[in-house]
Length: 247
Image (cartoon, rainbow, N blue to C red; front, side, top):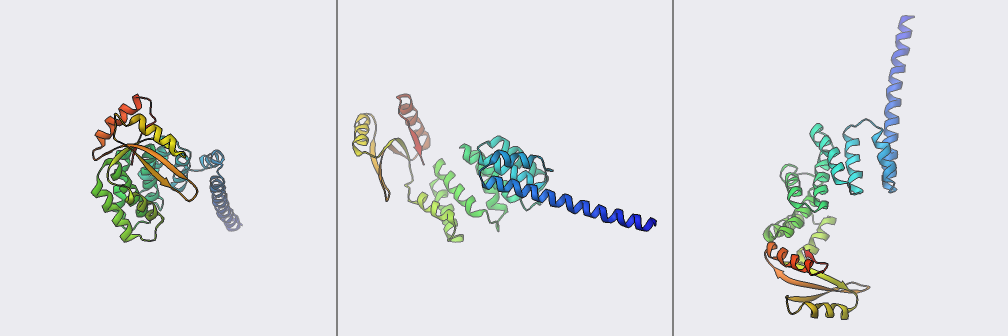
């Protein structure tokens, strides 16, 4: 009789574990469905109700990144990368951590994370994006040779990647900084703005042609040094122009 009771308890215990696991999987599954349906608040609510293992931590970091709450995303991604270094979500966590800084515009903090992917994760599926981001950061910092090197690595190792399409666009950009002060569908507006600036600045109009329209972009200067571009940008902003440095 005792054996039967023990056997029944053991079976009931196993059944309870299986049930809990299935409930967990279904709950996280539902959170992913909400995420894919752009219902981020519901996805967060469901994920936060779960035990914070590696996958849940990654998911929370992913959703907070998606909605633009980068500091909160980093809190979960730090927990993931610190506590689960052997997790299958570790590489994704490092990449997403880099993205939180990159999307905030803080390239100096993003760069070490992308470089760690390049150096340590040589067989990673996330290398194409890391190479693209490193080329974009190099362009922003005026490291033109590094920009070319990362684009060439991407082209050589991942010729069929989606990231290469974006890298090709970056490659076509000339190696200098410039400041955009306006973009117009009407060329007369662009010419008028150019005339307003001509006496004080080196101004030119870039025609950005698309299948359906042409944008006339008014830009100031071609600077090899970013600090020089930033000084000119500062003067333009003080004068009331909506200036932005490219790349």
